[in-house]
Length: 432
Image 1: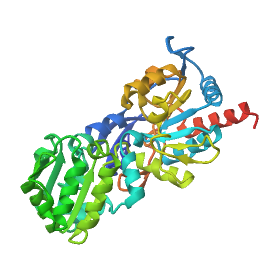
Image 2 (image 1 turned 60 degrees about the vertical axis):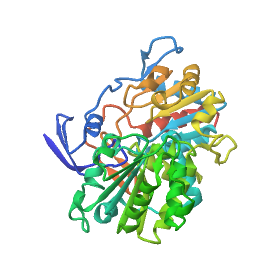
Image 3 (image 1 turned 120 degrees about the horizontal axis):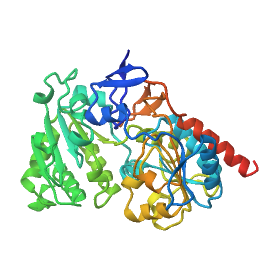
């Protein structure tokens, strides 16, 4: 029996690094400190046993060798006129680098899971920057916490206990008793049930409410109507007072802000609010990133291409234009004629019309787990689980890079090896 301490959890953007993993006979039998979601990921479920292929989408899968699957994947991608490489958020940064090289070789579009969650945040940061902080700073200093359009009780179960609401820090020794918690959402979530102040707004009115807060903060409360987005002016005044009088304010926002009406302008406006609050107190804002390394893909892609996501190599050089080059843009326009889905699940999270198009075209899936994307795949290549069977680098939601450790020996080859072999085969097929 082996006990691994201070292990990282490869599930959500919290990237908790205090786990104790118990291993016996190369099998994880316990994941101490992990939440239920993280424990399920670490312990493993519905793993794909061997590479699979099928002649068409109506036929059954047949187990094949890795060599056969890799050759077929390379054939599909090299014959494509408009290939899409999507996913990446549940893989380490070393995988991202190999994927970008493959995309460049193919002249493909490469896009991450951020395209359906926090891509609007990236656009807002382009315009306004991001006045943020590490989760450690927030834990140690924040006395006012705001969750806007996010529900960490369900999506990031250990966030409140480790980094924000209940955590005791150097200058926040009282933990929850020393903090005010504000939740802004369209419905009363389990996170809202724990809040000191719950601000319930109407669907799609986030931009209006942020604008009203900014007007009150700047001393122009007279221009704010009695109700904004379903929120009484009295409650907006109270929220501004709570924000202004806090010593350190930490605002966390989720898909309730990024994917509602106004999209990236919501975040743009919220960042402006944070900037203006810094005239009165210390205030920071952080996106609640979902998959454990979706932040990492944005960083690696930006280093390699100049853009964080939705990068098109069809012109021979990186080109980026959200609304044109993102995964769902090309799928809904039926432009792409082949796709590779890796470390992500388009079948579960994309709009129905996008999934219908994926069901019509050849799809290569590279993933340890059977999921809805498997149902529309033509070639399935199982790989080792990053952060469990393979070590590597990942970025926490606050942009801090951490090194993930290998907990057990892998039963399948790593993503990096598969991507290298596909790239080599594509070069051969293209006569390079």
